[in-house]
Image 1: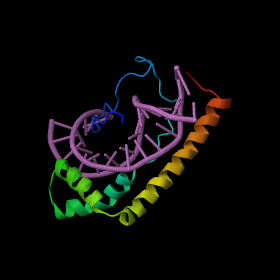
Image 2: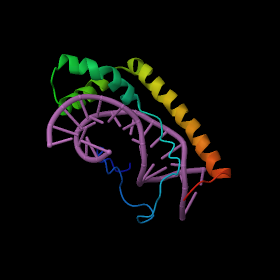
Image 3: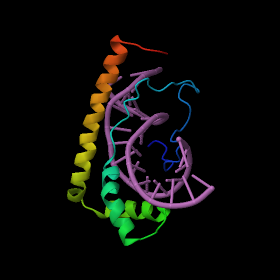
Length: 106
DNA sequence: CAGGTGATTGTTGGC
DNA sequence: GCCAACAATCACCTG
């Protein structure tokens, strides 16, 4: 059970190499999350039911509503999440190939 | 082989 | 442009 620090933007328990890590040159950003797709649809819905509500509310509502759904309802979102992951897999492949044969700057 | 770690994704809204 | 709760993710690298 790793550390779960609720986002925090710092999303990092600690420096892995002690502080030396240059991410990836191509950074094949992973795929989105089911929540992302869900938020995309609910974003307008939630905001519609809560006109003028601040993000703090929307965010929380989304989260609680998100779980309010059943696996079946999440399916379309998970499906997208998975599809997005596949997308990432592709970038990763390119990223792998790029660093395996070609190198630009550094 | 197993572990956990970090990086990322998107929403809104204000400065 | 960034940051914040909210949630998932899950591929990545290492020992």
